Length: 423
Image (cartoon, rainbow, N blue to C red; front, side, top):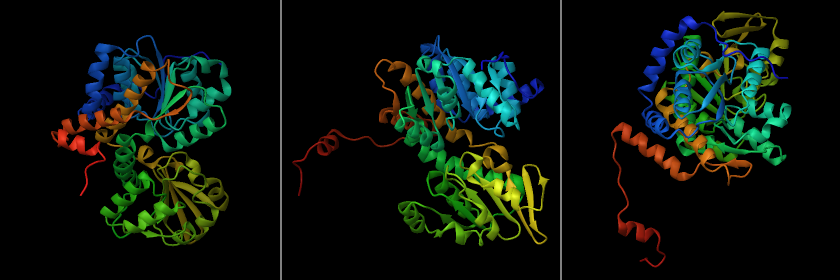
């Protein structure tokens, strides 16, 4: 049901000055997006279009929103996770850049869903989604608006999985850019961004030394690879749990111990889920964990942990530090859950560093531009960003680093395109 839509819902406008400083600081480390924003200001690719952005409201996302607005877009921004909003950033976007923002750190689930509906009340032509909650709600509850959508972008593994299921069922009625599949996204954001920010969140929440601890990484996709690599760099003994045999072999070859979660549960001091799947840490695993085990999620939705089962197992629970809940299972056994099982890197820290989000959000901005430019020919369904765009983003990033690389000579090009040369 359409509601009366206010201009914004944020925690405190007085936080705007602090947020503006932080947004501008992040912008200094996002040169690729700045180049795109400068071009968008001249070319106005989104003039006359309404955009709804469902994302983590961080300093980096703020610079993406600024870029879309510079390109002529009429933007509404909502949080994609109840705990990931930086309230000073939300305030700054409203007070200093005149945007409509609906995001409050710690908002409850009814508020979260109300904000989703506000984003849909905007009647968007273009959507940026993070986990596909916005797109799924649009498809299920507002089918009359689907025809207005030019296209959407999605940059999470979880969101892509949901869109693939929608496409298989014939429910995906518009073009969707799988931004998560871009190499300049998943090779860097997922690996280096998640790797660093996950450990940052754990350390801020617990103030525990990671060296010498056994850290269990559940899932060895790009996010898992990054988390495992960074944890080993901090001195942790890393165990990897996987269901994919190829990824499991890769983890072994990378020097990590690999075993089923049923075995790792009794050995770990810290557990990190990065799978995008349901109940990868379940009741049977909680039952085997040692006293003081710390559990967190850096995948997407909190359902990676079966917290309902843990609640029922616990004799009592209490918050012992901000975003750190203690569950007492017996007089001599306690388990600690960080950030209510939500994204630990965004709930307990600040999310990915600006430098890596520079490439991810460059992908988002250029994917939206691609949708607009090709709206007459793109069919409904999932699409990858063209390889040329991926290479352009990487080249701009190298330029920002002040790094030059080789180029192919004519002779090299000829050789690569010939089948007649040999020994």
